[in-house]
Image (cartoon, rainbow, N blue to C red; front, side, top):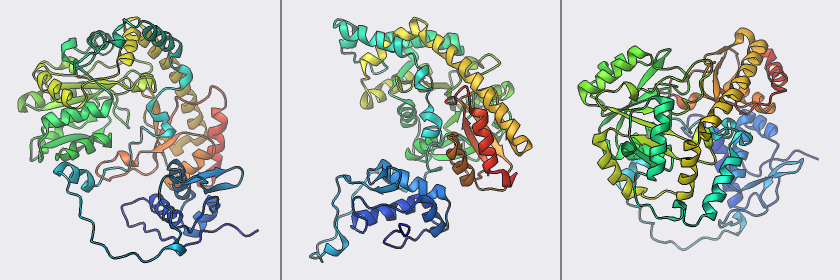
Length: 497
């Protein structure tokens, strides 16, 4: 039986900004919509199509995965991918059945706001956020480590007790007051944050919180400083508000604060991750923390302290927050419960300087006035009863063991061909391979053995990508077998070692 081929030519252009796998997916989708590929038709094997097109198998695999998630393809048992038997709700017109249509007036272009035009026109820095991918478990702990028993018990209590706060209507835009009280006490203990419940605003997630700050502080043309490499989603949020993005490099001591003096325009906002920089894992040194706070005070600039993932530090106590050193209320503290409790909780919160509380409250009231009460009530009890801190302590111990096992396996099998730059914090390692193979080849080999690697290329805002640099998650690896998997992975790239 001859190998399956596509019934139409495919043209991929590596010079385009759009990734090759998206180009391929678009052309296959068009073939399905035009009837050239019919429901139930099998697609070529990923390796065969990759050889035919002269691209890596990873490109074809990602194209098929994208189309499967959109409903255009389905996995055929033991026989590869095929066109879905039940396609998405779109009009499928076979090419042979197409008839010339009467000429009609050209559709009028949609008139968008400046904000809408910016969203469409901004070339996103990095195709996606690498920390919210399946390979990194979407930034959450494994399900079997979640406090599900405690969560179910509390949900049952609040849904039975119809006179509980979960059935009341709370109109405070800053969030459920008892939850804000509990958060204030918790972050005072865990992160040395100086605050009261009145300065806390609860949001449905990290991005809504950051968007709110961007809306109230940034005008088009203002400058926002971000770390490079760093979380590209923040850069997009600032850019959508019309801000100019100024990336500053990170070294072994964190954000290079001295480079702020080299800027021709004074920034309006500075976003930093001082306790656990992503993806490098470094912490901002004390001298630089003091230098940054003095810069913010002298120039009346607000600093957003992104404290995501700071709970997971191994072999040493968590580093106190930058906000705890701030004597002039220039630091906006931002963090989320997502890393600890996803998918049970995605709530995030801001600790605001007193001067910003009124405007953030009004801005939040116009966009996200109410949050689910059941979630807030349950989370309040988990914090007040110490369950959250016990959960963090438990998962920290499990992750530390997994981290040590993975570090040992990588070091043993790769030796000097790999550098592990972060070994004491977070939920994944930063590794740099010194191998004469492409990043795609490394990812493809890792996937073959169910190893969770993600390239850091989308974290570099200025395009200065470091080849061979990956995030390697250790929170989902089993107690047994990781050494063997890493050994097989190393052998698969052995010709390069």
